[in-house]
Length: 332
Image (cartoon, rainbow, N blue to C red):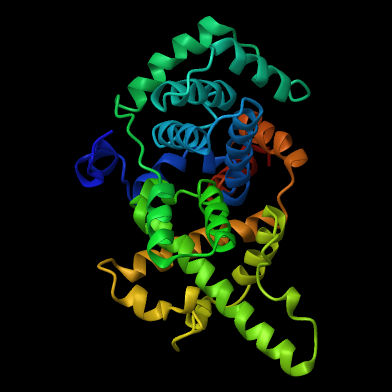
């Protein structure tokens, strides 16, 4: 891997803009809305994660596979491809690149098991191996992926973050791969956005605990607890996401109330980064939790069927033209 992100193929070829992502989704959005398409993609990201956990992959391998999946679909539509085959091949390729060798048969076996009640997985080793060449071509053979985990670890060391805060920020980074921020922003900015979110939660916990202390209530319910689970984190961040967009103003600006007694507003202000980018990434991640609140894995197969088999919606102009045509064709 290149020693410098800015000179790597990740930076020079695979940091895209929102216009490119919108163009990539155009065909699929002719058949389903953006919320449905997001849930379909989320289902496949989760599938990659499940396969990775069953095969005991490192988190970085799972993240690389998801990035490959995302990169592939910046040039293809879900409607015109089989995402299950793409997902399996992305996992197989990520194992090679991240030096986590896994026999292709094991990946196919797990895919068949995961999709047993969802139409199955009808591909053998030769098909996956063959599709690997198509995947490499679509990725333009640029396979380097920088992840924000290393940046977060370095920041946590500098700030001497508590293990609970670091773990929470790590969970946020994991969830960020369900969004498109890894295609839009450098990894260190995503790591800073995860820390930004933790600062807001930390500030709210501080305020809530103080309020509870004044009222005599038990303060243990404020903010993210040290024994929080991923589900608890989602609940906390969904609560954050539903508040007005000015939530970032809640970061305390007095010394002694930030992470590890630091003034985090000043710490962010001293960074040589665009704070607007960090806020945009934060909003992107928080929007995920709004979608997650009514996400159901059981409903996704029907959504995918609608995307694959559904007819293209008729525009109002086309409907009007059809009505005019029918009226003129009727005998007087």
